[in-house]
Amino acid sequence: MKLGYLIARNCKVYFRDKSVFFASLIAPLILLFLYIAFLGNNYSENLRNIAETNFGIALEKSIVSAFAGGWLLSSLIAVCAVSIAFTANMVMVQDKVTGRIDDFNVSPVPKSYLALGYYISTALVTLAICFTALFAGFIYLGIVGWYLSVADVFLLILDTFLLVMFGTALSALCCSAVKSQGGITAVQAIVSAAYGFLCGAYIPIGSLAKGVAAVLKFLPGTYGTALLHEHFMGKAIEAMPDIAGLKDTIRSSFDCKMDFFGHGVAQWVSYLVIVGTIAVLVVGYILLLSLRGRKLKSAKQYKLRL
Image 1 (cartoon, one colour):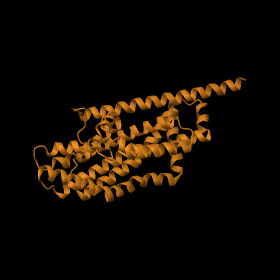
Image 2: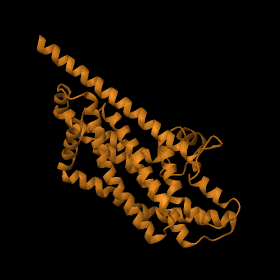
Image 3: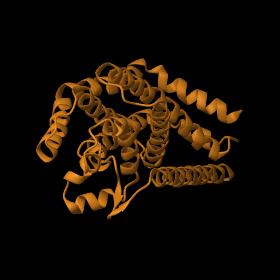
Image 4: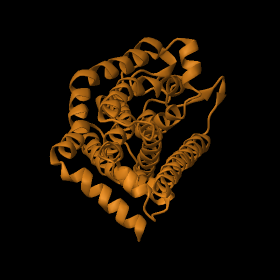
């Protein structure tokens, strides 16, 4: 009951500022429009060039549109799952600035409940926004070229859920060390600018320098983005002409098929990496926030005795 109250309270605090929520909600939709308007043709041309130059074939327009749209949507969801989570975690930082979190820490509420309250409320807000973007993407693919199966749709929902859990855990751990709104704004700006490159959302990993690509393969976000690539674009690739080497070349060129230093990475391994990372980050976050709360409570009790 206490946990439910904390979750509801944090969500109400976030939704109280309608401008922040509205901006967070439309930001992915604006990015989707900008991606389609300015980057869609680039990815379409890259795909056509690979097919025509290396294999001498012309791909159907619907396949090209579905493939390019899938790449743009997977990039959008991968980045928003993390960047929106940092915005939604403003509630925890605001509580630090106003001192409310200190009141919670000296109350009888278990410190793990306090940490989970912030985590779950942030995840719910981020899920609402990311699922809105995901279903808007489904509508777009339905217009330009739909090659997704029912299984792909459910897997994409699962991928989005897991990436939001990962983004929320990452933001929670980072925000637990931030004590000012200026600090969280700076962290959010850095993450928003850098994360898309670090997870392979903006540029295929295979096109990067070998040293950089090797480092990115150790980052868990890379595997989450690869799952989105595979499930958004996999069926469009399968619909391409059955010419030896074409499909494998496109999969490897656009990160639909992850490898770890020459060894193929199965999808279940990618899921294991994401789930394991979420577990480690959440446990670390809860321990860190609980330890801080216990220290604060002990310090206040000592002052009262004096």
